[in-house]
Image 1 (cartoon, rainbow, N blue to C red):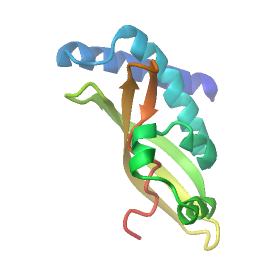
Image 2 (spheres, one colour; image 1 turned 90 degrees about the horizontal axis):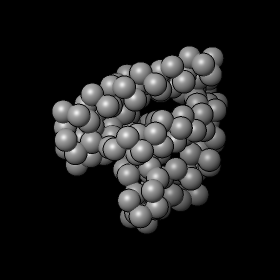
Image 3 (cartoon, one colour; image 1 turned 45 degrees about the vertical axis):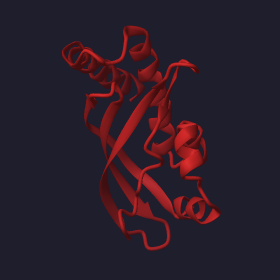
Length: 144
C-alpha cells in the first residue's frame, strides 16, 4: 500500500516537473523534493482522521487570519475519513501547487457517508524552506 502511494507521489512529481517546466514559475527541483514527503505526511494525517496532526501542516499566515476554534475542532471529531484520493494537481501562476482531492467521509453519529472534492493549495515558504498547506483543513461539510 505504501509503495503504491510512493509510486503515485513519484508520478505526481513527474507531472509537476512537466507543468513547472512549462509554467516557468513552478517549484525548483529541491522544492519539489520536499513537496512529496510533506504531502504524503499530510495525506496520512487526514486519511486517518488525525486533524490535530493535519493542523500542523497549515500555513501560519492562514491560521492567523482563520484561527480554528473549539467548535470547528469538535466537528472534525465527529467524522471518520474513509477515502482520500488525488484527482489531479497543477502548478498555479504564482508558483503554488494545487491538488484536487476526493475525500469520502462518514459521520460517526449517523453512519452516513458522503464524498466531497476539495482543493489543497501548497505554498513554498522561502524563509522556512518548507511547504505549507495554505487553504486550511478540508471543508468536509461544504455549506452544511
